[in-house]
Image (cartoon, rainbow, N blue to C red):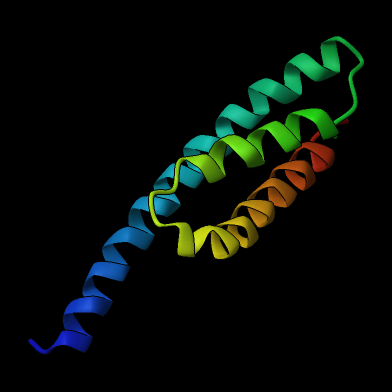
Length: 89
């Protein structure tokens, strides 16, 4: 197996794990939504989002990836907010 094949295989394995973790995260999001609904809280909490972004960026060890992780993580937060909004009934 050459480097390209090995790298793609590794990416596929990581993508599989990321999909599993995404599903797990979104299930937890429903718990957050339930609490928000019970307490008449809005889906979007700007202060919490800023805290999440800062904390998660600090988890990266490779500083050169922060810009790209920020794009990734903001997309995740947008998905989470949309999921909450779609289920807010």
